[in-house]
Image (tube, rainbow over all chains, first blue to last red; front, side, top):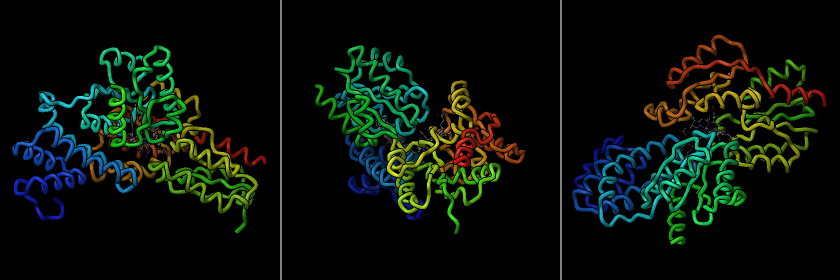
Length: 228
Length: 200
Ligand code: B12
């Protein structure tokens, strides 16, 4: 858009349109992504395919460039906004569709004392894209919130996010409590956040560590596959 | 160039404060040499440990002692691994907000309002560059609520009692849509850490 050569999205064939969508998503162009999503739906595309081939695939590329330091947080937020604008159209269709590929519920929340939520929101979006029903508990969650949500939603996976060195250990507190109550044996727990690493995740007995949103979505799928 | 017996290797966000403290404590450049790394690393904490490692590998042998002017700063343990290898110490806090306010006062502020976003003198002076440009709010002003929607207060942890800075901090709060809170905390535990070096 910015380089002046206005592309008429409707004139593109499906393959080119999907490529263009990924580019537009990368550039954080919400209106364009919204429009292209509608065009594919109008052409009879299955909402699941629009989601996985264009939006999720586009965000996967964004995630790689974020990890490699090519994109920074504001750009990623822009991309997330673009993905959201496409999801808005797909969500109601996916909620109705018979062949909905639901992998179960994924409860996710930032732990007590922490109000960073950009990474968590991104992971939530990718999980939704991967076929989970995502229940987002928001920020600053004490163990009681996780327990209540597990009770209410009977999730297939629980995810916790922490961005502060001071709040990371609380993930361990939650996991211990789940273990005490015998919940951990049947509920995989994923943890993530910039200061974490595999070593820490192992030390607090988490089932797995999600380095970024795309990897986390794949890991989550593998976890439910394994548990079913 | 004369070399001090102690190297203070610090985040650029602390340069002015350390220079002021050195003067206050009567520490000469011979006693204490200061080297800083760019404050921008704050937003890319994965780069902090390797950069510190690089400097210490090159210069550790020149000094008897090294004080690292960083907290843990979200390096996920990587900084501590580097420091252990080079026999160097850092401030024992999570980040600069905690060592300026002191652990107890910092905990009190966060306990009273978790949605507190902190500024120091340095961040007030460089608000535009580090916060507005650093978070991309110059290019994407509509992202303000994605960043600060969970926050209520902007808490200015002041080192100096400076009216011009207070005015700027108040304007920063307004710009972010946050309630302005002023706390004069001084140099906090950073002063103690430097004073201790002076006694070696
Ligand atoms: C953006 C940011 C903010 C924003 C937060 C906006 C928001 N709504 O979340 C603002 C500016 C408001 C902010 C505030 C603060 N921040 Co901050 N912040 C950052 C920054 C720069 C980026 C974090 C981010 O959003 N990254 C982008 C996302 C996409 O990445 P991510 O979070 O890592 O998530 C990915 C993975 O980790 C993973 N993941 C994340 N969560 C989960 C969960 C699960 C289940 C899974 C599987 C995976 C997963 O997938 C995600 C997608 O790829 C980091 C530094 C950094 N680069 O990490 C500092 C940082 C985390 N903040 C820090 C600090 C100190 C603060 C403040 C205290 C600063 C202040 N001036 O007040 C306050 C916090 C106050 C409080 N009361 O809590 C420090 C923490 C230091 C420490 N010792 O822990 C850091 C490390 C900066 C630093 N070096 O000092 N911050």
